[in-house]
Picture (cartoon, rainbow, N blue to C red):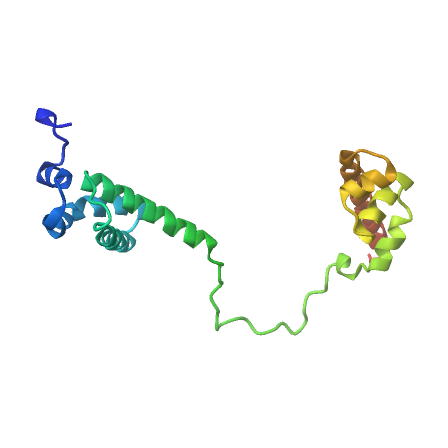
Length: 189
């Protein structure tokens, strides 16, 4: 607060708290520097800040007929902030698109060999499942091959739901070990 109990900001702040009425365009002009500074802090660059202030003025002009705010400066600052949040949310929802590049390297004449695990088939997995302990094998088969939920498996085997998750995790870990050992034995030195 400034001297005399009035808000700081000089004529713009005083005008901003006045009744909007027909003084609307001059008030916007007075408040533009304040809003631009605020927008620059939010956006990080002047171009986006100018767009945000423009969007704020546009919304304000559309809504002034509905209800004239008591404190125009505060109302415009809140509108600008809300628009900034809306823009951030919209940007987060947009898919990330990689730009097309014309200068991609030509296809390699000798492509790199596929990693060993790329050659694992469903039959390899089924054979490895046979090496699991029965308590882990049953849970893995029911979940992976019969597509049953944890709840269905728990009811069928008479165990807790959390036990299903634990056994499934251990079955997967053991399968990785079994398949890794097989791959190591099959790959040439």
